Length: 592
Image 1 (cartoon, rainbow, N blue to C red):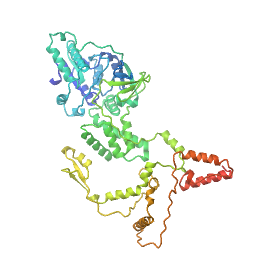
Image 2 (image 1 turned 180 degrees about the vertical axis):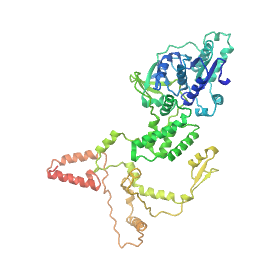
Image 3 (image 1 turned 135 degrees about the horizontal axis):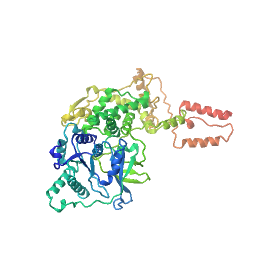
Image 4 (image 1 turned 120 degrees about the vertical axis):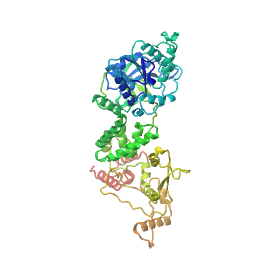
C-alpha cells in the first residue's frame, strides 16, 4: 500500500522519480507489480504516445523519439534548428513504467502539455542508491525541502496542465498511477489540491488555466550511433546492458548499480589482457579490490555512493596505467543489444545531434536526470592496428628518431636520478600527523581518504635530509622486461644542454676526478691532464633536413664517381654512418 505522502487522493498515487536512474526504474516496477492500478499517467505529451510505445516494443534495442521544433531566429541567430527527444532507455523510470503497463494491459494516458519549444530545467539530488536502504517515502521526504519551485512560464503551465489531467482521469479510473520527475511532484500536487479546493469555480469545469495544446510536429523514431549511447542513457551503457540481461534471464537486478561496476572492471580486465597479452600488466584480484576501495573513496569525496565514468577511469589510470583506463572507458560505453533497424540513424553529442540529412540541431532531453558535469582526462590512446603496421613498414633503423621534449627528459636522467635518490635519503624518518595549525610538507591524500569518516586532515612531515650522494649505482634486470624497460639507450648533455660542457678545463678535470674517485675509489692526483672539446660534434638536424639531403644527392649524382655520406646526412649513430658509407660505395662502383 502506497504511503499517504505519495497519494494525491484515494484514486491518484504519484511516484516521484529521478530520471535516468536504474534504481528508481527497479522501484517503479516493484510498486506496479505489487499493487493494482488501472491507469498509468505518463508525463509526456500525447503526440509522443504512438512512437514511444512502438520503440519500447523494440527494447532492448535503444532508440530515441525526437520531435523537431520550429526554428526561433531570435534565439538561434544562425538559424540552427532544435529538437526535443525522449530516450527509450530501459533504466528510465518513466520508460520502465510504460513497459510494465504495456505488459499488464494497463491504460496509458499521456498528460503533459503540448509545447512548440520544450524548456528543460534540472536540479541536484542525492544518490539514488540510497533507495536500497530507505523506503521511497522517506527518500522523498528528505529531498522535499531542497526542491526549488518550478520556473515561471512554460514549466508552471505544464504543471497546472498535468494537475488538471489527473483530476479528469480520477473521474474515469479507480486507481491512477502518476510517474513524474521529483522536481515536478510537489508542485503538481499543489496545483491538484488547488483545483480540488476550487471545484465549483470555472477552473474545474474543464477550462485549463495553462491554455490549450500547441500545434507540434510529428515525432520520429531514431536509432543512435552505438558509440554515442552515453549521451542518451541515464546509466553507463554497459550497466544498462546488464539490467536487460538480468531481465531476459529472470535474474536479480536489485544491486546492479554496484555489482555492475565490479562486472565492468572484470570485463575490462579480460579485454585488456586479451588485447595486450604478455605486455599487459598483471591485474590481480587484490589490485582490483584496492581499486574498488579507491573508487569508493573518490565517490564519497564527491558526495556520491556510486562512481561515475570519470571516477572509474581515474582510478583505473592510477592503478594500472592509461591502457587499462582506456579499456575501462571503452567497455563502459559498450551495449550488447544494439542491432540494425529500419529507423534512421542519428549521432548524438553534448546537447546536439546530427540528423540523417547531415543537419546539426540542438537537443533537449525531456527525461533528463541531474545536471551532468563534463570533465577531461588525458589518456595516451593505443594506436590502431593499421597504424602500427604502417609504422612498422616505414621504420628505418638507420635514421635518427628524436623528439626534443623527450630528449631533454632522457638527457637529464643522471641529474634526475641524483635528485630522486636525495629525496629517498631519510624517508624512513618521514611521518604523518593530524593537521593542527600548519600543512607542514603537504596534505597526505591517502591518509586523509582513509580517515574520511572522521573529517580530519592529515599532513606529511619530511625531516631534513642528512648526508650527500657521491655516486648512484643502477642495477638492471636481465633479461629486461619490455613492459618495464622501454628504453635501451640514454644520451647525456646534448640537445639543449650544451651549457654543461661550457665549464673551464679545471672544472671539467675536477668533476672527472670526483666521478673516478666515487666509481673506482682512486684518489691519487693525475700526472697530467688534457681536455679535448668536441663542440657541435653531433649534427643537430633542422626541419626539412631530408629534403635538403635529397636535393644535394640529386646534384651530386650528376657527377660520375662522386657520392656523399656520413653523419651529416643519414644519422649520427655508428650503424647509420656505416650504412651511409656502404650506399655511397655502391653508387660510386655502380653496384647499386
